[in-house]
Amino acid sequence: MTKLGSDVLSVILGGGRGTRLHPLSYQRAKPAVPVAGKYRLVDIPISNCLNSKMNKIYVLTQFNSASLNRHIKNAYAFDIFSKGFVHILAAEQTPQFNSWNQGTADAVRRNIMHFDKVDFDYMLILSGDQLYHMDYQVMLEHHKKNNAAVSIATIPVNANDATGFGIMKKDENDTITSFIEKPSLEELENWKSDTGVEMQDKGRDYLASMGIYIFNREVIFDILNNTDAKDFGKEVIPNALGQYKVVSFQHNGYWTDIGTIKSFFEANLDLADDVPQFNLYDNRDMIYTNPRLLPTSKIMGTEMKNTVISDGCIIHAKELSRAVIGIRTRIGKETVIKNTYILGADHYETIQEMEGSGIPPIGIGENCKIENAIIDKNCRIGNNVEIVGGEHLEDRDEERYTIIDGIIVVKKNMILEDGLKIG
Image (cartoon, rainbow, N blue to C red; front, side):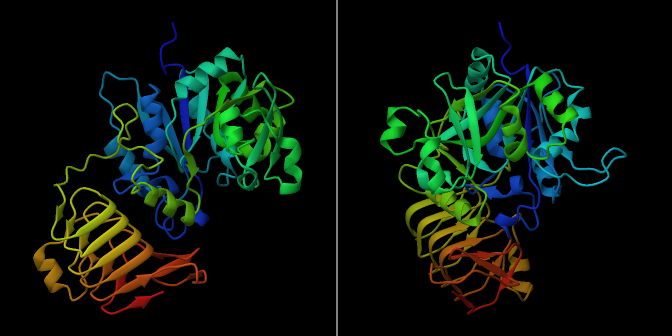
């Protein structure tokens, strides 16, 4: 009998600078970006691993990894009787590699000496910036059943979405026969796969790579030791098609790649809908994070509609509508917040600190109007401030905020004085 998870080593790719998530990734690694009010992006793949009984996990990082290190250290401590671990492997220069990581495959290659010391038969490679639930055991069993050397998790997409992904074509046995990177609409006609009746009825005829892979141990070592391929999606997978049996594992559930400010914004606000696509309220597929032991939130006279409120908040606002409110958020009287994600704060201020500093306290002041915005952590927004995003706004990057796709992102630790108007 297979020991669940004992033969799998999970490797989570932390990514580089994450420029498409700027400014949220300016002072933190992409996997450390707060999501859903109280979690970090890295909590999603780690939780999926733990729920799948796979508890040997490495997270590979290169850029701004300090806060990610702290989070993982505080959130994922295994007892002394467990062989499980969640370890950070930060990029480093060595006598063998005197430059920084050049891509996803190169990042894994540079850590082979660490992986070689771990007992495993299969390597599960994951992205650190996606939102989804998946039982990796089901994918592993599919991999074994098909005698695959490499398995790729794929998701059916429609023609418009297909142009932004690597698209696979499979045969009736789920074997991937060909691959194309970000095809044009004109090229797509010959790239349809049998995705099943339910998906085809929705026009989702194309199999997109989710950036989730299972490699047999000897295969991943052979590829990384004997080639100079830098990236899994652009080089390793296309090259593997002619050398190994590569199989598609189709995922039909919710999945989104949180690689841009717009996708990040939409994925978080979706959590405030009546029935969100990503289910946080699940006894089995739990999402784990750092238990901060915060008090319950306190709400006084606020009209709320479709709002998610995290722990430790003090809210006097007049109205909250389709909003996600992060930990330790303070919101003043008569303030109206719509279509906004407030990431919260790292600490509380005392009354003396709030009254004696000469600057607005951490949080949102009184009589403010905030719409179509993301407020990063520890921002100090004064009274009578208006932050109103919209599609009419042009993209630009200012000292205290950035506008992308009509979304106003107030940068971490910024101070917005009384009466300021943005939008």
